[in-house]
Every structure is written in structure tokens, then in C-alpha cells.
Image 1 (spheres, rainbow, N blue to C red):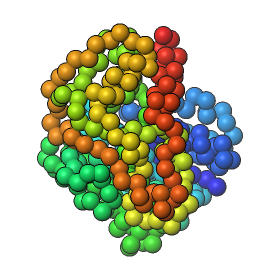
Image 2: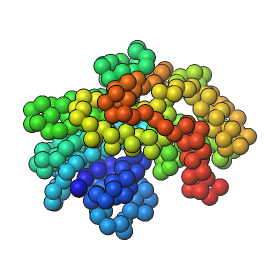
Image 3: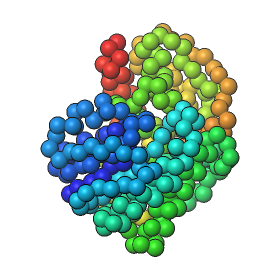
Length: 311
């Protein structure tokens, strides 16, 4: 089997590359390193069956040879990234997805789109189920990411219905683990970095907004199960164990043994108040549910950051 992973040098993409190499597949990782890191692929570069192509997926994609799967994971994926790169985020969601689908069509390959819980916006339904259409501000600062992914889902389904491509759509909820960027703006790496350095942990608003966090190995398992299941409609993959961001900050202070204090800053525009997946579909269609306890995953992630930071 031979697979193309766009965004292959990213946090999730690099774990996917490693996972499929371990399965004995040939892997083509494609990345332009706007937010991905070569360090994420350092341990894979010399492995048999691995190839790295430096390319911007918003430009025409060419891959020589056959492909069995195209996994489209290229995109800025944190609020800091897509607020700094709004046009690039929209282009990779639209043009990049179109180009990736074109490769899948040309190679007669199956296609998996990495979508996101952000398609639900600031939800009015809780927990969020796949048949909920979302509550998104299309002209707000976060809309560039939300709408890029909503368009990506629409064009993926259009290619499935029109061209008969065997597609999958995964709506990924907050995921964490090794290889996250310390400065990517998401809560867990930000809190861990602040705690390990003794800086105050920055909580936005009153910290009462909720999120649901899954460890990277649970996500990869869910993606693999989705690839094997005949499910073309979107599927939530996330941990339904919900917690407030204030609770998360306190957990990380405890797990790191830090003496950091918590400081509060104004809530960003359109920041979701709640986020929790309904994973009924994943349980029934994929036989999947998260297995890694959140504190256990946080310990592993803290250990990785300690080593990466030399602290």
C-alpha cells in the first residue's frame, strides 16, 4: 500500500506517517513547512518506503506512481496560526482540498479529509453530533478556519457523489501529545510551556469555557478504523470527557509540580463556550472510543516537552 499524507510534517501528520511506515506501507509526506516541522520527520527520513516532498498543496499536486490513499491534513490548525495566516488557511481548505481530491481521482485512490470540531462554531447544541450544522460567524476572525473546513467537507462530498471517490471525513476534536509546537497557541502546549518555565498560566475569560481533549494515539486509532469502515459521512473523533480550561490549567500545574500562578485575560472573539463530541457514531460504526486517560496522556506530553526543552 502507498499513501500520500499532506501536512505530513505537522503534529498529527507526522504521527500518521510513522504509523503507516510501521504497518509496512510506503508513505509520501507532503509539506511546505509553514507550520510543520522537519524535526517531526527526523526519525523517519532514513526509513525504507518513506519519501518527503516539499510542496504547497494550494498549487497543482503531482505525485509519481500509484497511490492507494490520500490523507489531507495540510492546514494551519491552531487559533494563533490561522489568525496570523488567514488567507493561507482559506486557500489550503479550498484550493488545497480541491488539488488533493484531484490526485485521489487521478490515482483512483481513496481519500480522507481531516476536518475539525470547529465546523460547529460556538455551538448551540451540546454535545455536538454529526447532524448538527453548526453556529459559525463567517466574517469573524475565526471564520477563516471554520469556513475553510466547512467548504472542504462540501467539496469532498461533491467529489464522492459526482466522481464516485471513496471518501472519509473525520471531525477531529482537541488532540494533544508529543510533537506539538510549544508556541502554537493551543491550551495544552501553552500551559505546559508556562508551567515548566515558572511563568503564569494564561487563562482566557473566566476559564469556564469547556473543551474535550484526546491523546494522539487514540486519534490515530480512530483514523485507522475510519479508513476501514464504509462510512462516507462525517464522523466525530474526540474524547467526550469534558473539562473547563481552568480545570485543565490546574491539572497541568499539579502534573508538572509547578508553582506557577494563573492569570486571566479577555476572551478572544467568537471563542467557543463549550466543546464536547457525541461519539455514538464512532462507537457504533467504528467500534472506537478513547482509551488513554487524560492525566496519563498529559504526563506523557509533559515528559516529551521536558526533554524537548531540556528542562
